[in-house]
View 1 (tube, rainbow, N blue to C red):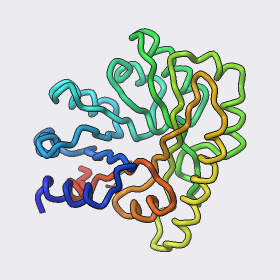
View 2: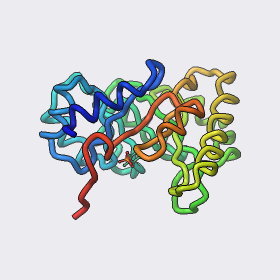
View 3: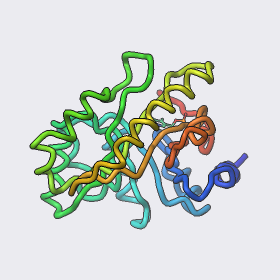
Length: 222
Ligand SMILES: *Cc1c(COP(=O)(O)O)cnc(C)c1O
């Protein structure tokens, strides 16, 4: 299947309430152009430098999502244009995003990444760290960031029940946050689900799926 066909097939499976992020990391600009021509406007990348190179050459009505782990010293390169940062998992990083956003007179939308998987290698906050972050005095002073939801990745396993359980846990935390509103906290996006598990994620209440290989084909890391 072509990129266009894959994209349209997946889009057909998503209800209107679920937003599709086309994960184009490692893929050439020509692949992104094909998806763009088929109507895709939201792209996800996991390296700031690569995303910035693509942002420079691609049409300006694209929304660029940073879905990977973010190093504090690289935030400045995307602060001018990034539309959503999915992987925020510390107050330190949030403070840096706030600082860089201010320089560009912007408010940058962020998702807090939760650790829901069994693997200890995956990044993210636990529930206690999340609570500490959003109730801290410093958080309330960050006027140039807006926390609009949560992101999480399930364990890499064939065990569907486990994946389902992990997504359900994230959805529960998400729901518990929706009643808490402050100037820079308005939780409405739940980013969960990738090529292998987005249907399970949608069953559990995902509002944003991040799909790469099912659209662009498998990736070559060289
Ligand atoms: C690469 C990546 C994806 C997409 O993975 P696929 O399995 O190719 O759909 C989604 N989310 C994150 C955080 C990623 O790094």
